[in-house]
Image (tube, rainbow, N blue to C red):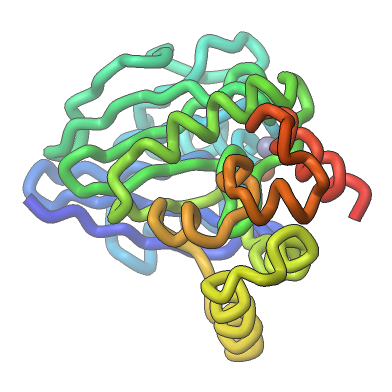
Amino acid sequence: MSLEFHQFPCLSDNYGVLVHDAASNTTISVDAPDAGAVRDALAEKGWTLTHILVTHHHADHTQGIDELKTVTGCTVIGPDNSEIVGVDRKVADGDVLQLAGDTVSVIATPGHTLDMLNFHFVNAGVLFAADTLFALGCGRVFEGTPEMMWQSLSKLAKLPGETVVYCGHEYTQANAKFSLTIDGGNKALQDRAAQIDEMRARGEPTVPTTIALELETNPFLRASDPQIRKNLGMEAASDSEVFAEIRERKNNA
Ligand code: ZN
Ligand code: FE
């Protein structure tokens, strides 16, 4: 069993990803940010779409569903949210799907939205974190609370370090600049920020990332770090309070 992952930029800063399993002739689009871009990617690879996995209701993740479903007859799997039109199979936290020759576990990560689902391809060791966890960042807390978002990120942080993480957006360079204002003495973060500048200058994606790299450098996962707490003057606060402060600072950055 070997899955192929094809990531492509679309809209202004979104990523689309196709997951392909030749053995079962399965091709999954994770979200449907832009039907045209997904169709172009399918044509380029010579793959036929069989499924869409939907993470959350925001338009930049769902607006292509209708056209893709009409054109391909694919099966749409996603959250139980009537705002998302066209979902054939509703899934929730803890559900396990057998898909593309892999075991896909559904992880609810509410915070950015209340319906947010992430998909973990267990055997491949790949996580689709959508707008919950970004490279050096996390999603804005639109519908949940900071405490809820912290609990959601904490679930993802417990996945194996080598887990490859695909994110919904290319926000990494701005995130790096902000991260240095919170954790500027972190050598691993300094090195990564420099690398990111080089990658972006060459026009390369900085996604996917890994859980291990994020644990080492992403301040939104590092609320328990003594140096970050010291930097913020929050030595006695809870982890979720430290997280909330970092999130608030990023909102105002
Ligand atoms: Zn979103
Ligand atoms: Fe988004």
